[in-house]
Each structure stands twice: as structure tokens, then as C-alpha cells.
Amino acid sequence: MGTKEETLSMARQPWITIRGKEGVVYREHPVRKNGRRPDRYIAIRYRSGQGKRTLEALGWASEGWTAEKAVALLRELKENIRLGRRPQSLREKRAMAEAARLEEERAAGLARLRRITFGELAELYRAWAKEHRVSHSTIDQALDLHILPVLGHRAAADITPADVEALRQNVAAKRPLSGRNKHNPDATLAPQTVLHILKTVREVYNFALETPSPHDASLMLFSGANPAVLKRRGRGVRIPRSDARRLRILNDAEIAALLSYRSRRSACEELHDMILLSLDCGPRAGELVHLLRESCDPESGAIRIYKGSRANPGTKGGASRLVFAGQLFPEALVMLRRRLAAPGRGPYLFPGPDGRARDVNGLSRAMRRIMEKLGFNDGVDDPRNLVVWHTLRHTFATRMLEAGVDIYTLKELLGHASVTTTEIYLHLCDRAKREQAQARIALARQAGTLSF
Picture (tube, one colour):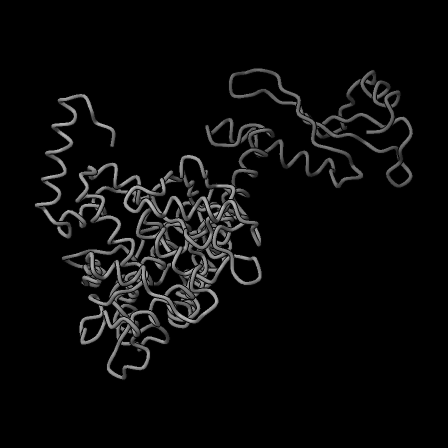
């Protein structure tokens, strides 16, 4: 408009009607020119549908407004008022034009999202998972090795449950690239691995259904039905059926042999202490190698296991929890105090040779070597019956139940998200021992002498 003085000067000027163009008026700028003439600010006057006198400003002649354009607009508005159509004012016309523009942009955004590929959605999900999921490395593996080569180039909106079912069949026929069956020419991927891959597809769609488009926050990255909904029966993607649960637990003689085992390796004592703590407290292997010295209390034997922290990425499910050394094996508390009293090579309770966290896969390799020496797995055909590192956690759980611990307390000690997961150990423990322990606890409660 110009300076404040110029604006005030303009406001004081009367509106001038253009000769021969009734209803079209203007004011002249006191200084600014449009060609050789002063720049004109053009407006229109008319009666609204309610009979109210209305004046609406159009704009400057230097911006392209002319008397002819003003006459055409005024004629359109008057005709709409006479016939009861819309728009009936310049404000309404501009609002309708803006709404049409936004709708056109929305339609273009929807069309763009309908063309978005599954691969593009997967990369956005991958970036999110890296920040929010402890298991992001397994998500990367599932996407890169199995999912994106098949679905990555497809439009996400075009993928159907039949396509996901075809992916399941394709993946289920693949040979494992790692693990105990990698050298078996007849082996295929485990049903649980196939299920994890299908769940990753489902999660990509769920993420897209809940994530706004970067171009329009009112639109989600994907709309429609998730084609990767898994079902146990009926139509849709069939859930791979499997029972990969390891039911092997160690008996007293096996525990004694394992804790007595010594090798010539320099890390033998370290390995013994990790086995002892696993039998006594039941941490997962990933949790064990990331236990911090600062999270252990030598006085009470309390050990804090934190869920999903950078210091302890091995924790899954449930929540951060507290366990106590010495509950099943008193020597575990002695061991813990000894380790904490000695100078540490880093922040971890069981540090690697360089002071950093150990490779969790190293525990599995170490247990495999020990089993070859002790012969616990000799003659075992079913892989579910093999003694592996996770067998120590199973043994802890069954021993705690046999000692009379209730299932809900055990759930917290194991860090399970649901007690349903913990209930498997009810079928593994010695029921006679459990009933005897529970009877002793009941008697102690009646006598008021319960100390456990």
C-alpha cells in the first residue's frame, strides 16, 4: 500500500465511480503510478441477497485489475444473487476458490500416495524403527533379504492378501543362511522366522496407516485395509504353524557337571560366573552381557535390568526389573560381591577382552563347545532338545516354581510382558516339589515365620 501517511491519505479520499460502469469505483494512490496515470485501487458496490449495501475491494490496477474485469465480476455476482446461486460475494468467491485449490491439492496428494511403493513405506518405517525399536537390526534383515526383493517395487495400494500369502510361501521354501541348519540341504526357514517376516510386512502397513504424509498432515501415508493381517483360519494370510519351544531343562547332575567344568581357555572363570548367574537369576543372554557394574548392589545382591536402554538393548518385552543374586545358588551372591570388589575393565559386569560389551553370540558358541565336551547333546535328534545358553533361563524358571514362587512373581523376575508366556514353565517343573514347597510356605504363613 505504501507508507502510513500514504495509507491515511488514501482512506480520506472518496470513492470515484467510473463513468458508464455503474457499481465499479476506485481511489487513486497519491504517489505511485501505473504507467502515466496514478495507480488505481478498484472496488465494487452492490446489494447482497439480504438487500444490504456491500463494498468489496478487488485490488490495484498495477496488479492486473481493470474496470472491465470488475464489471464482469459484478455482473456474475448480481446474476448469482438473482438466481440464488453461489458465490454471491467476492469473499465467498475467493473462499470457494481456495477450497477448490485445497481439494485439488488433496486429490493430488491422494493420487501421489496411491502411487507410493511398498519400498518407500518400508524405508520410512525402517528409519522410525531405528529410533524406536530395539529389534531394528532384525527388521533390516527381514526387509533386505526377504521382503523388498519381492514387494519393494510394487505400489503399496496394489498389494493384496494373496500377494502376502505368496510371499509367505516363497519365504517358507528358502534355506537358512545361518544357524544350526545352514549346512542341512533339506532345511528351510523356521516357521517362527517366516512369521517374523510376515509381521514386518504388517508393521510397515500399520506404521503407514498411523503416520501423516509429509506433504499433507491430514492424510496418512496409507489408507485402506492392511493386506498383511494374519489369520489362523479362513481367508487371508495364514499364520505359519510351529512349536519351536525348547523344553529341555537341566537336572541336578547336569548343573553340577556344568558348574564344575573347566577348560584351558583364559576366559573360563568368566564363563563359569556367567553360567552361575544365569542359573540363579535367569537373565536373557543379551541382558547378561550388558549388565552394568553400577546396576548391581553387593550388599543386597540386587541387580537392575533396564528395558531397551542403550546400555542394555537385549531386554525385550515386559519392563525394567529387579532380580536378586543368591536365591537359588548362594554362591552366586558370593561371586557377585567378588567381581564388584575387584577393579573393573569397563562399565560391564562381564566385559569383553577390550572392556566393551561381549558379543552375545559368543555365549552360544561357548555353550556349544562345552556341550561337545560334556556330551549333554549326544544322540539328540530334535533341535528343541539341545542344551543351549537359553536352557539356563528355562532351568532357572522351573527351579523357582519348584521352590514355591507363584507364577506372577516369576513373570516379573523373567521380564515377560504376559503371564501366558510364563505359564509354559508350569508344565516343565516337578509338580511334587512345587506342591511340597507351597505346603511349607502355607504352614510358615500360618505360624508367622515366613522369611522367603
